[in-house]
Length: 104
Image (tube, rainbow, N blue to C red; front, side, top):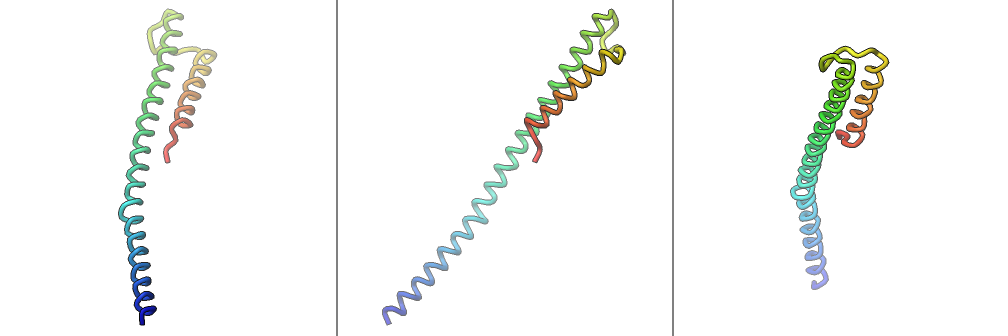
């Protein structure tokens, strides 16, 4: 009789422990993990946006400097020999932003 009581108590304790484990995993752990992932994605998105803005601004600054060297106004039409390498540089900087801060 004593063994039967111990077995029942062990089964109940095991079921409670298993139930608590499932509860903790689905109600506490997973939501917290998801909130962390969302926060990290938001941080990466804002860092990526800042990086992309800096890349574009750097391109505009260099472009305008070249325009001024040619005694033309800012945002002028540069010859392809100057414009293409500068566009390539901005494209490279943008790609670096996407590599540093990938979106998941």
